[in-house]
Length: 431
Image 1 (cartoon, rainbow, N blue to C red):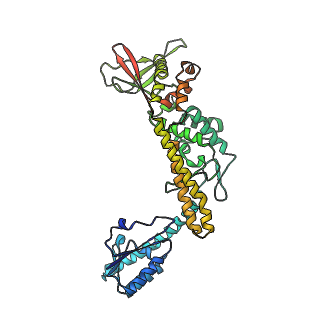
Image 2: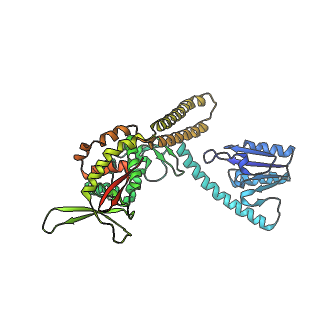
């Protein structure tokens, strides 16, 4: 007959399923947080001793080395073999190398316990939705158990986000900060700011989990959703084209050689007038594909968008997305209702304080995941926006930066189809 025992810290891990252990044993004793089942194991071993006891690691037998050694001594006194599967330890082997192996394992246990205490402290901070260790991000200060707005630096961060939302250019926003505030940051730092949950009022932890609404946000949820859309949009474009001044930059591809096309500026000697052309960057054909007038492609693009965009939007399965949104919203409401019931369960003694905190933390992270899924769905006003931008007059008063914003909101790629000396466009929309 064989027994098995596992211990799991609820702050750090979940109790494993017996079937996941892969052990062929007669009985499994599992503890979560406290070692009541370990005491039951000793009692059962006294009345009905097994041939051996399987554990994952020796440190599961106690909170320190002395407790582990005490448990091993008790098993040895009863003549029961202890096998630590993940540490290649078998107490039935009396060889000298096993003794040396035990000493190494005990040293390892001491190191693991120190690391575990640190991780437990971090886990308790997570349960209280406290900020993770380290310096607060620019725009915040560390307050009593949460981030608080730093009024001297938060306007800098807000200006950065406002500029990015207006122009959709990461590098342009970085330059804007340096010019207006003298605050020099790298493009990598700027990209981290745009995706950092802390500026949205959320706290992210090292384990990848996010707890929402833990402190005052610098940008609103609507602004955060727009930032995410801009980041996804820019990720589809060739590098550096997000900052290009021309609205078609990074979108146009030659249908013949499949090369992206760059914008070339040509000037006439002693004249202020300039001409813009779209030319393939890496054309493999011989002779190479010729350039095309930028203004003609721009006008043709606007005409095609006005004609084809409403039809493309109508093909979207909005009832499907409505159903997805409805299901996600209902799931969020259910989780929030459970959250509201937990304090009463503590008052009646059904849950203890620590178990309640763990449950609250898990519910809040689950709600955060659901709300993230909800935020990436197409905006509900997509039809009305498509109708607005399909009016030719809408485009007349826009600057190139504003046109760039709207083109990239809808267009994935513009392909130039050449026909002898003529050409036409094929626009591939994002949705």
